[in-house]
Length: 168
Image (cartoon, rainbow, N blue to C red; front, side, top):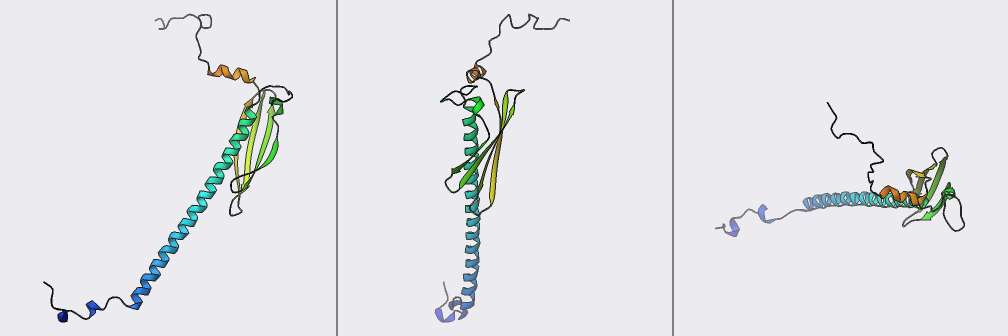
């Protein structure tokens, strides 16, 4: 049972004063400012990651276009291995413009071309960013590449006959 109202302490019924309320408001304000700052940092990081993802996708697309040649020698209306050359393009992105550079170095001894695709851009803060992918494109006829997917079938003519277990 609670004591009668007149027996309670006067301090218990007064509540909080102005200094306590101001201190609580200052602490709450600092906590909100900190949370907003972390949200801004996370938003910036997500934007940079999205731009980097788009740049990697553009570099992969450039490499796939180069790998899509259909003949070795130039022919009208067809993309050939001989058409794979160094070039530079500027492409629009969702939030910025990307510069895609292809640096092609032929290797006549190996009948291949080394390709370095570099995608560069300025992010939302104006900082320069860059992504680079390196690949080697073989000069084999495209129809021969299908043989890589065929299973190997052993032939008695291909392997010398020898015992499965070595003799002692």
